[in-house]
Length: 167
Image (cartoon, rainbow, N blue to C red):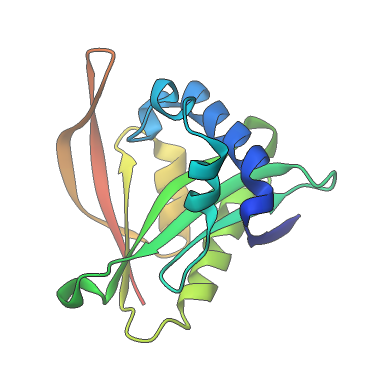
């Protein structure tokens, strides 16, 4: 497995994996397939464009296929710049149970350890996604609250656990 920052040239493969995730696990994301299927390649390229405060990591299997991804975005507000957020964590079904998710998170944490002044990383996870919560806890995240009815999809509410990793 190879993990690296995604760039514009990865836009097509990223979008395919993202749309697959939105279809397979719609409850796990704040966005929807119906919304993102209309995104242009330019929109996707902009999403992938790394900056000093944002990057998307991709995990590639032995066939060089993208099987996992995670996004990091640092808060830009002066009073919140000590915080960053994890978004869009997803591992394709064929990559699950092989350490892809853990490897992505370990690499993300390794990279942001070098960010001056960054003290904590936040994420949210659907409360009944026990596998994801176990993964996050295994790399040091801890729950600090629950947002009831955080998401609503097809008339069903989903609670989210709020988690943080102090650097």
